[in-house]
Image 1: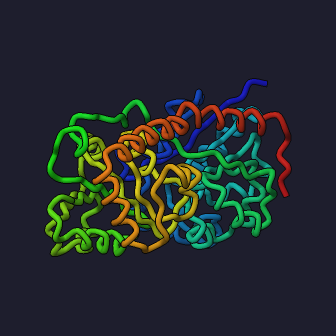
Image 2 (image 1 turned 180 degrees about the horizontal axis):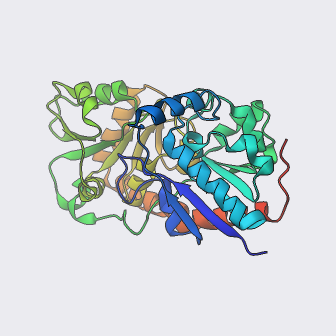
Image 3 (image 1 turned 90 degrees about the horizontal axis):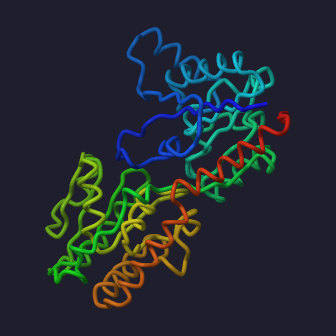
Length: 357
């Protein structure tokens, strides 16, 4: 029986058009792609119905676009029967009521889970019903314990990494400190969600009196206050895709501070552009950048982070070696490789009847 694959996805507003898990759709042969617009309902009646439904939904972040996606899945299951595989690419915020009816839903249901372990209990308010789902794609092994503790069989948990567009995010050797005699060593910080901004500020403060170092921050504007009165920091928000790519290419090191982590777009994109990475050792990051390749520090250890930055600035050979390692490591996570692993999962779930509780 030939499968019928339907992918349900959305777009994270602050991701570039080349970032985000939805890039997977470019590398998977799907018969249907349902691209949802994630936004709060404006209609009074829909808004109240959404609020009422949320008392029963698997995800606390369930919104009306989730209703639309689940209804589309139900209709497709009536049409395509057991041949259907429905994959929600952002399953932790889109899944609501389908698991209740999965025993009556023809085909298979797969969810990709993005949330950090410390957020999963807040987002997935009824996690136990997810044991009725056919497979969960986890982006890091640190997510496993949450689902095991909530009764989801381990055979339904599949760790498949996030990917990166290595054709778009590429290195450019023309404008780095060590390759173009530039006077300042550029440290880049990118992102919004779960970032450790106090850590970022303390690292930047350590270089206030050293004009050889400059920090560039790309984030949403409401995070600007974290860097007030720091003349060695330039802050940017709402930047176009080309600006973000150029920032990766023209910087000398990525500084990554996180409260918790599974996959991280910024880490993978910086690696693909050849940026050595100084990061707090958090969550699943070492599954994407091994401990011997990255410059990891203990959480909130701004002193150690500053020392690594100084070492990379003063040691050209170290910087060049790490640059090459980053480019090589990033290719492991190119979307073609990730898509192959996802396709193997599709084959696996399509060959066996769901073992739902």
